[in-house]
Length: 188
Image 1 (spheres, rainbow, N blue to C red):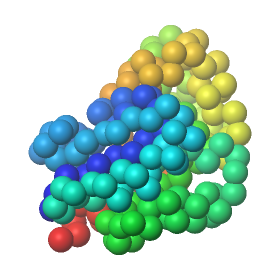
Image 2 (image 1 turned 60 degrees about the vertical axis):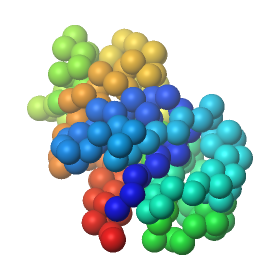
Image 3 (image 1 turned 180 degrees about the vertical axis):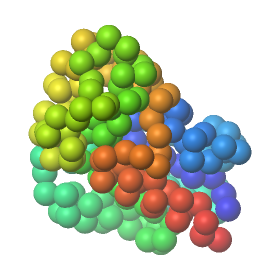
């Protein structure tokens, strides 16, 4: 299999991948097995998808497109991204919508928050009801800022992602990302 190219909307997603991918695929090395292409927001990401997928000539390359849902219609958003990626065979492109924002993935693992920010208000042993399904939160970034006391998205993402456990997260969209990526990596 060729490299997996990740098209992501922002730096915090790239930082998360750098911490999480070695836990899923211990032998993968950045630039050798996978490559993050970080964009400046959703519009920049969506504008670049057709251009990058059409022009990418590396044999065997596969693509993962990661985009926040941000309260939109998840199915419509995924259909739109699939249209933009139509230059490649569907089996070579994994599209994952982060519900609702990347911070939901972090809220899905309260132990990771507490490990990264020991003084945080996270409660790994006594989970408040609103965090039981973090993908339903429309204000995950605000919730995470309140719990950790920091709004620095990229550094906060890196710190928490360092402690994320790929096989025990309450975020359904995180689990869908992990399982989809594992399937993509197994394809020949």
